[in-house]
Length: 79
Length: 343
Image (cartoon, rainbow over all chains, first blue to last red; front, side):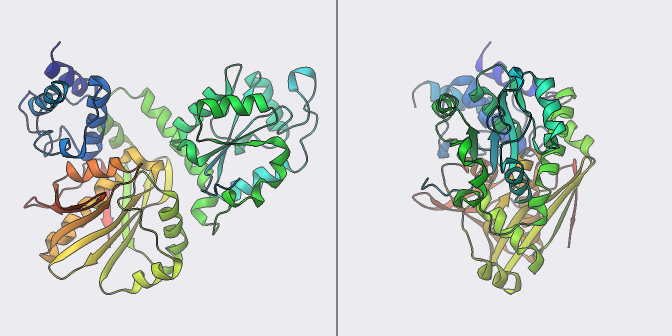
């Protein structure tokens, strides 16, 4: 399972995957509110064993499943 | 003990701590002197209590009922496992941090076992049980109505958690089943003790950690340059009391959020977001920009994430002190699962 799929599965487990694809705008849609935003941040850190810094937590990095996956891969790549 | 950071939760051992002797050896005929008074007094102060004891659950619970004490304890952990696991389970269920918890046991071995696993939990010899209410870390400045009802509100929280665990839909779908009503109103004088309590007790959901004296808070209520709001949350399980606080400073062309605090008891229920929505809507209506001061602490990262993923961007940075600005053209809408009324 690649990074995107692992993130997508988290949305499925939370019952939020209906109508969701990898590019769906998350932050202003019904797929994610700030309550859920916290959960996704914590999920990403736990699932991929990374610690997100202040600069990582931005709307650009969390605006879609693809954006989150890109963030994770940058961080896993040692950036 | 020099550390007077307030204790929010006391976890009790039973044998030779709450009662005299060992239940499984035919003891527990009487309570230890002063313990019942301590338990009632801590409860009155809004300090919640539980039990971590190595015993048979049914027998120990029955004996606590005989003594009229069972209802004082939330989610008691009575089993043959390590007490540190019991303490951890309690803190997790009640969403209380180890540094705000105390553990009371007569055995040095058990105290050390808990301290080894959870170094931030403060441990007390049962010999001190009768004098706990006199120690500085067990003081509350005021006994508020919310404080005295805290145990009942925690119990409703536990019922909610149990209902959520049984629920198979998503977390927002679950929240919708609660029929939450949030009422936002100006802070008035009778609220001030609760306001002070929230500023002192809340660390995780606190945007700046600023504390104000009672007199300063009273002045803020009347200040024409400030908008000071408190909110009350009710749902189908009952009232959660006054759970959130918002302080905005009017700086002419901008409103600046000085304080955004939400009780950790209602952490997962979207109250902080709703208060942010309220602030963005108010600023929008007044035609002012919205800024937010944020002071990073060891505990309040959750607040930073909330701001950053709700349309706020860094404007200025000075070490751990940040100034954030709301950048979206439209104010944030309230979530569907919450009915908000604002005066």
